[in-house]
Amino acid sequence: MRGRGEAWFAHEAQNCFVVEVGPGDEFTVNGRNVLCFDATPAYRIAAVKGAGIAGGGLFNSVFTGQGRLGLVCEGSPLVIPMRSQDRVYVDTEAVVGWTAGLQTSLHRSRSIGSMLRGGSGGAVQLVLRGEGHVVVRPSEALPQKAQRH
Image (tube, rainbow, N blue to C red; front, side, top):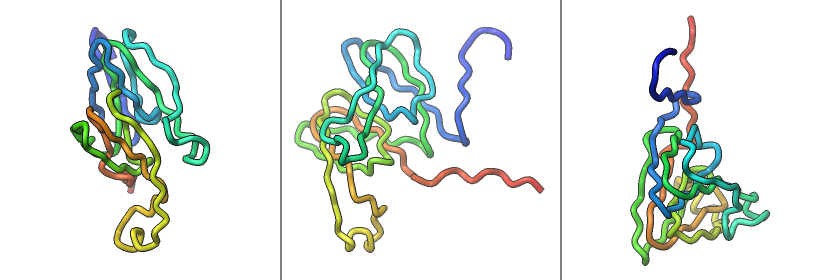
């Protein structure tokens, strides 16, 4: 590679996308989805509120301040806009990130019926409520590697 510019390399043919964090904003993202970020935002590692050890000890990267994040996920990310009265339930393995205006908690569903009706079988979902945006990956399936003959 030569010259000046940006080069992005993803893992396992994952989709790359950019999240712009504005001045004074905050974006929480699952660490496995972080490909790169510019030098301007500050970041820290934080436990997901409401998760605790019983929820698998969910830890994420929290970016604050103005900057760009290069993120990856399997498939094209779904961005779900939320209003203050909205509530979204997300598989803990599928959530990519969310904006600062959202509160989190865990919901445990142990219903065998929900698994039999086509659910993912996940016994714990992350519940997000408030005003902001949630980014979710559309698939838990890993891309198939090309076979060589």
